[in-house]
Image (cartoon, rainbow, N blue to C red; front, top):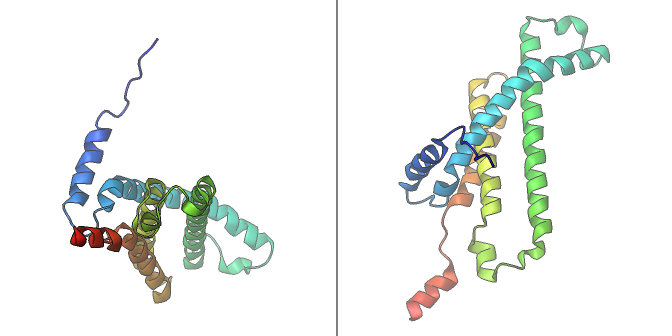
Length: 191
């Protein structure tokens, strides 16, 4: 029987270094376990964005031009309008893929444990499950990419889109905050 050869032997070393980097801060303690996934999803959403921009967006531009939804003279290759349409189509496709990933992941998590019956009442409110932590890490990587895109192309997108990306980023970031559980503090104070 052949043994498995690790094609990337430094994977755990890099992952441990990223975990140590994120664990040095004290407020977002849960982020330390998922920091590697945040960075990985940021890289994957960036690569997906480039793929959508170069391969998929031109196809959709041709489709919309054939249906006469957009005047043909305004969307010629090499024009500013064409590049803006490519960026917007690429951004929309990546956003849609993120939405499908998060919706599927959440649905699976809910169906796997309906009503969180395996958790106590305290841990449902203040707890942190590994599966949802991974989902939030992927979403944090997506919103990191979204903030970068919206900031880079601020003239094309409005400030409202950038504010939406920032609110999504900070909203997801708050899921990694370690909130003290009031019942455990009460138990500690009484003993």
